[in-house]
Every structure is written in C-alpha cells, then in structure tokens.
Length: 433
Ligand SMILES: O=P(O)(O)OC[C@H]1O[C@H](O)[C@H](O)[C@@H](O)[C@@H]1O
Image (cartoon, rainbow, N blue to C red):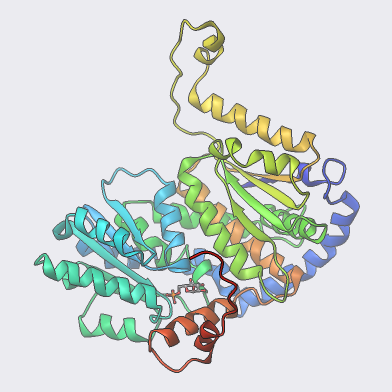
C-alpha cells in the first residue's frame, strides 16, 4: 500500500497540515511507535492484533473448513467485527469457487427469511462467529438458521463451523455437538480480527489464498517504523489525526471499486469504535466512486470544511472497452475503456477537491488481490492504533456499545440491567398521529 498525503498539506487545503507541523507530530509518532512495539512484544490486549500475520495458521483454518469446502453457499452468522472483516475479504476478491458468501449481520426478519428460503440448505454451510459467544443478534440468528436447517431435514451439525472465544455459550454449544471450531485469538478485539480465523474462515471456504493475505499484511508490518514519513500506515493515521485536530471531524472513505464497498464499512467500524471516546474521534462516512460523485461530491467540494476525503485507488483491474458509437457527442467514449473512464473520474474528482482546497488522501493498491488486500487491512489497523495513541484514548474497548447491548438484554428479560431503565425514561415531544 502507498499513501499520498500531498493533498492534505496546508499549502493545498484548508484544513490542512503544514509540513512543519507534520515534522513536529512525527516526534509523537516516534513515541507512539515505541509504545505500539512494546504492546506487540508483550502481546498486550489489542496490540496483539498487529502480530496476527505471524500468528494465524492457514492450515488450521483449512482443516476446520474441510468438511464443507465444496458448499454452494456459506452463511456467516456474526455481527460487527465478527462479520465485516470476512465480508470485506470475500466481497473484494475474485474467486474461482462458486460458493456464495452470505452474511447474516442483521436481525431484520424478512431479510433473514428471504435468504433462508432461497438458499439450497442441503448444500449450504454455516459459519457462526462471536468472540464473546453472547451477542444477542448472532445467537438469535443462529437459532433461526438451525431451525430452518432442521425443518428442511438437513443435519446442521454436519455443516457448521464455530469461531469463538475460549469459553462462553457458543464454545459450550460447539463442544456439546462436537462441531469443528476455531478460537478467536486472545488479545484481539473483533474489529481487529480480519486476519485471524474470524475473517478467514469464509475466505478459506471461498477458495482464497490465505497465505497471500497474511504475506501482504506481514509486508505492511515490516514497514512500521518510528516516522510517518517512512511508513504508509502511520502517514495515514497521523494525517487523519492532524486534520481532525484542525477541524476535519469527518473522514469519508471512498473506494473506486465496487468490490471494495464493504471495505469502507469495515473501516467505519474500525475508526468509529476505536477512536470515538472521551468526546474525541473522527466520524467515518462511506461513499463509493464513481457512483457517489453524483450524490455526495457537491457536499465534499462545497459544503462545510469539516471533512477529510480518503480515496482508495484499486490499481490494475479487469477492463472492458466502450463500444464505438456514431453519435458525435459520444465519440470520445469509443476510444476508451470503462477502466479508463473510472480512472479519469477518480483523477478528476481528486483534483476537483484539491482545486477547491479540500483535504484528501489517496491510498494506492497495485491491484485488488489477496496480497494487496492483506496489506490494506493491516495498514488501516496500524493507522488506527497509531491514531488512538495520538488521541490518548483506549483504542481497544467499546463501552458505549456494551451499554446498548446491556439495555437490549434487559428489555428482552435477559437479566437485570439498569441500562434498560433509560428506555422508559425517554423524553417525548410527539407531533403527528
Ligand atoms: O464477536 P462478538 O462478541 O459477537 O461481538 C460482535 C460485535 O459486538 C459489539 O457490537 C462490539 O462493539 C463489536 O466490537 C463486536 O465486533
């Protein structure tokens, strides 16, 4: 991964960071890097995620999925960090296998039912993922999926893989039914677990090259040094932080590839849950090039000066020529391909923001394959850990989310949680019927 921060400099954009201010920030980056390296060496909670390229064992993952390797579909039941990493990987990568990857990361009943009714359950595998083993949405969906398999006369115990922590309800269930199971590595929060079994079981069933994913991540790990001017991941994390400090409180992630749309969702969780605490943090927004040039670009170029736009350039992709036409006004298109049109629109949009003095950063891939994607995921995780150090927040916890989880359980009668009382205490000023 390369990172180009030129359009975030104060000489181009406002808000922008001057070269001098980045030099000064680099001293903090050096200190943060020392802290990060110590955390990695001591396998501290969270920092341990940056050791995954060496820790994850592709053979173990492939062995666990062996019994369902030739399934027509794989239903991953998980939410947040237990779904988005896997979905990012299988959505981004082309595969020769025909396995359809489906993610049940919502409890919308009609949507869940639609999936269960249309999939060939006797040829479908189930991948249940929950670090805690207690998340209500995941366990509820799993019970629903199991029930659908039973109703269709399919033995779900023959078709289920479990990835969870060392103990908990899901671990007990896996043991009781003797299901193939993998462990969420210790010290790795869900949103940092894409490069473990959590993110890679689906990739294995879909036939992706797990070693290449890890090699791309390992190369990014090698590039972690004590200076933002030498390390693409830190350059991104430090620049995003510096711009937030200067008023760019929103970070719009804009990949120029359909296949990377889920990556923007994954990034949004990483950035929001890790940095959004102590009244700090930069709000992630999601957009897609070129589609959202025609819906959001107006705001990004001419709205409030509160945004950083992060582009992801996918590099080389499959291409398709645009056929010639005898309509004079469209003749110029006939000399191009769709890929060239996409690239031209990307360059034009980037330039349009810079020309209007709007900060933007470019993340460049050579192409979208396992190696590059592994590097991108790792790079963004390292950027986020660095940003967390610079903000001085606890990057690896999410107490605000836990609050809502407890309130939900309380409402459903799953225990006595004082958080649930807040629901009854809602202030109302209702207009309408
Ligand atoms: O993996 P689980 O324990 O089921 O948790 C799934 C998700 O739950 C919560 O929403 C947390 O805030 C997320 O960070 C986590 O990824």
